[in-house]
Image (cartoon, rainbow, N blue to C red):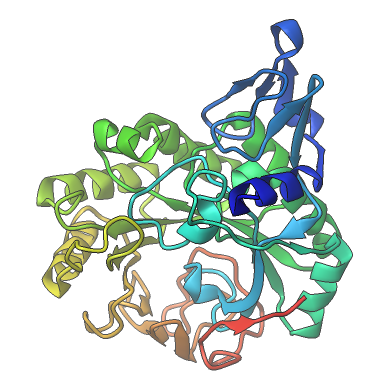
Length: 371
């Protein structure tokens, strides 16, 4: 039997009914899924664009009871730079995505059931087991990542419920292809929301499987709803690296809030773009300058430690003191006092601990967890 068929059969056996908030009845036994911006009308026996949410006898079945991988990561790897710096997060993912980016770095999990090569063995676990793992590893946060969490948000919420009861902070690492209904559904359980803003050109967004304005609306809405939002733009040579487009992105973010951290990160060849060139260091420097010129207070260069002096550090926008000094995912020094600059007392926006570690609580590299 083909490995993909085996995986499809296995995943079909580990599902749950969709959260009522994320499904509507349609005609002739079809259902409309509201988990992502595609708003698929799914007919009986068929699946949505994501391939993992499907209609079984008029009921929308969605992933549940498994994870594709679990590991303890520095929160900076997500990347969140304004949330619990120096701490670790228990990161888990599932399978599937609402996009099909040619350069995806997590394609083994995200493109399952869409690409014959993307076959990952799931690991079965209960929400309580996953939360216990986080507690055992001393991780004060749990983050749904590695695939697109919106299409598996029903299960993520089941995990986050006991996590929140134990005082944990929870987050999504997402492509931002959300619906208002999905954001309302996850908001009681999700504190942190990292969104990829991949391009400012709608035609290029559609090549990836999305719609630009859906993502822009998600960013505006998530910020308005009180999620802690950080944005990432992977700068891909020949795709989104012109000064004009970088400026458009920076100005859009500044129009939502100058306090939203923007990570401009370096591309490396992956998946179906193995022959592409890496992002030149000068492109990241230029993107950083454009972001600051647009008025953004917190612009970070990522995936290229040291390429820009202080490009990974958090600085006070008032007195320019270095508050958090970083190298890659590692926090070398954090001098903030209760979320404020110790020199001028300016409050820095973010999700902070009262007594944060001065340095990272670990080597700054992922720790794989075996279930």
